[in-house]
Image 1 (cartoon, helix red, strand yellow):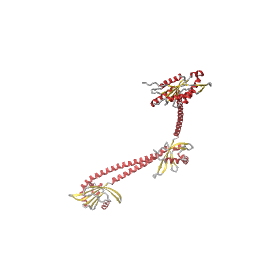
Image 2 (cartoon, one colour):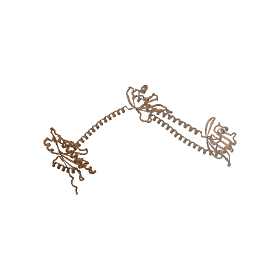
Image 3 (cartoon, helix red, strand yellow):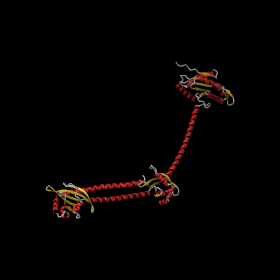
Image 4 (tube, helix red, strand yellow):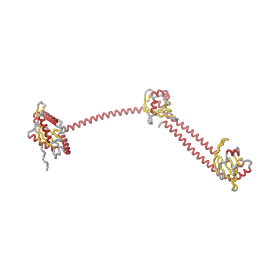
Length: 522
């Protein structure tokens, strides 16, 4: 909560408390006064009734024998106890005043009738009425209780009597007491308001936050010692003495107007304030405009909190966070590089595990996996496939005559020619030693025989250059077979194609032989 709001709230509470006290006091006083008044009237009702019964005959006799129509009550004796009444008025049966009995010697019959008219009541029976009589000469207000009753003799109504009782003392006492209490409460309210504002003045002065007031035209009206100390000034007086420089160097008025103009209330704005010696400090400035009754801005109340340590801590934390992020980035980069290297190594290892290192073709394991997958697909889709087995003729003689390095060159030449003659969908592998195999998906047996024959001729016409510079020709023997309905594994095709390959080797080599399918089981 802002300090100005708190001050307004406390002052409002004081006014509310005062109004509550006045209300409670007024209700209590009125209740008490009414109770006292009604108690007095009730007692008066009883006493005046008895008094009337005892003295009505005497009043009639007095009216007939009195020399004047106005008689002081003091001359009638104590037995009547007339001091309680302001006056008593006696009328005849037609309502004409006959006798006036007074406690005040200044009253006359004429003045009483002029100032106190006969009450507007039904005179045929006893009645009570309350009236306020306003006199102008001398100025006075009478609060009267009037008891009017008929006088009967032998059952005949012969007169009327009004008993006037003055209750102005009760009314005046209530008024004076109320006035005293209200004046006392007003003085108490004023004293509390002064004390609250003095306390707030001290609060602004002793507050842990800096405080200043600035007018809409940029004049620094008031500051506290905390602000002066924060900005490096020896005292408030020193800061106020350089107020113009302080406001101008910090462009303070622009910032204050900007903060005050924000539609949504919230935390203050963080500003860099220039101190007396030129250094700057981070401060959080919150602004509350103080307005007149007409809504005009009188000045702005501003609270200033030094947040230099907080900003320094935030800068250190940001620097630490950036350093941590950089370290994490470098670690992530190294992890990514290591992961990539491991993946590459894994791929290379997997490739080596499935590749013949000399020729670069698939090895026996890779050939089995790939062809088994193709056989499963063929069985599912009903496609035909073929298998070609190749064996280099007299390869052992080459190794024995020219050495194993020359044999390796022959194997490389063989794989190169076979790769150039194969289709992209064919699976070419070195099964072992000088034996090679070609699996041809979606290929009929006749087409496979033609491909094998072209490959045999291409190899026969290939000259292989050995490491020592010699040139030799090589030939191959081939066996060809195709898939059969009963084939479930690549070994079923390898058994048949081996038979055809041995037939090609046994019948003179450098030829292609076909493996015939086994007879179907009954």
